[in-house]
Length: 200
Image (tube, rainbow, N blue to C red; front, side, top):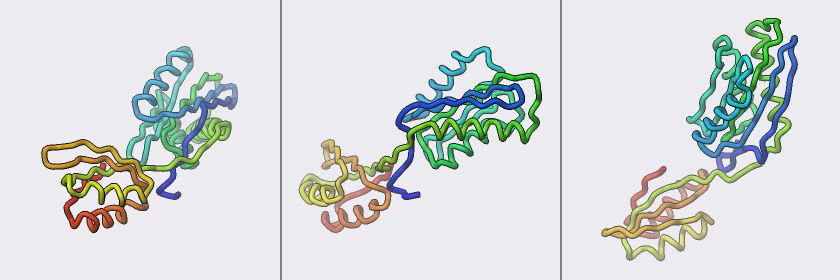
């Protein structure tokens, strides 16, 4: 996967899957941050309060994710949902699979197939879109080199936000991951080493 891009969904989607009398209902939503994902889960749990289980998974980025089996045997629901999200390389999404028990136990393998299968058709019903994966780096530099900094940053098509401090400028610069080190090197050269970086 290109580090400068990420995949997410445009609009919410849903799907249903029936397995041996049990009904599985998947709901997928875009979630720009963890709080919005948790709110979506709470909303679905309230909407389907009479369901047997409301299992879910969400992924914000490589390190921020969560999943829940919501009473199903450990590893049979939440993790398969997350694995399906990862199969499609999606981030900033939350997927809830609701189950209404139909009277027949599916077993460990059957549950994994049902939850991952419902998650997959729910994702396939969504429109997936590529976005630029801009990262933020913070930089501090004296007032005298502002024009040099702007000249370099403008060539990288990144946005820059500046705040004045008693000692100079504190900036937040948007840049694509593959270009971070090159940008830093050019800024160090342009400012004769008078710039200090803190990556966020």
